[in-house]
Image (cartoon, rainbow, N blue to C red; front, side, top):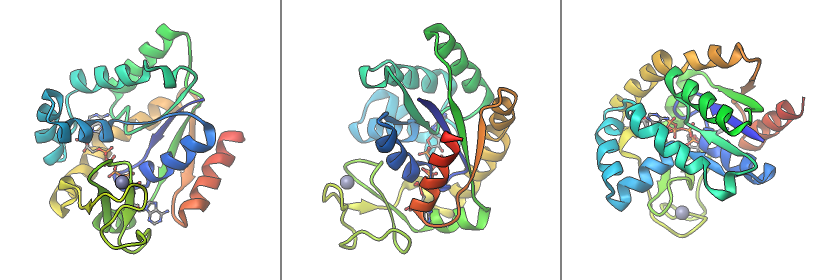
Length: 215
Ligand code: AP5
Ligand code: ZN
């Protein structure tokens, strides 16, 4: 299956993607995680992306689209993938359509995670991620690690993301409304959108998403 996950910052895209990708046996491709891995490795791409991310803005399309395409071309993604955080504006959605057309494949669904804004603010404020791998995600009250400050998956140190400061979060929400939300209508026109109410326990949201994919 080829699936796109959309939703505001803090909606739980990364959290759900980890479970859904495992269940569906497809790789979880997060452009945010790819950028963070490049930043921690000190690559040129990471240096370029960091200033945009720290300001809560989108990284330019010419950097992002190539990076996403390279990842989708890897062998493990040949039979499908779960995209998290890409596409993030209509230009990227059009570019993705072009790439998939060239490969003779199509998206199966776009899952739109719906969460009220006051809840995403709470989720982001308490989020802690792993220094070794930013896809290892916890929350100080909703999803506590067994040992405070330590990743359950790999034992790495947990910390707060640089772009999770209140001021940057406000900017990211604004960018989501102006730049990312329009892709929902773009995909509605292709009859691909399934809206998933994303309040409630993590496993309840996963069940809703799986049911929507079956229906
Ligand atoms: P990215 O990393 O994609 O961030 P985002 O979209 O803002 O999403 P988040 O990672 O903040 O949230 P999430 O929805 O994954 O929530 P999570 O599962 O962690 O992008 C970061 C930056 O990179 C962008 O600002 C941009 O600069 C750049 N970028 C990335 N992609 C780009 C692109 N395509 N084009 C251009 N620029 C790009 O959950 C949040 C918290 O809530 C966690 O603590 C979790 O434990 C908790 N939680 C999750 N589910 C529940 C639940 N059901 N109940 C209670 N708590 C929950
Ligand atoms: Zn970890």
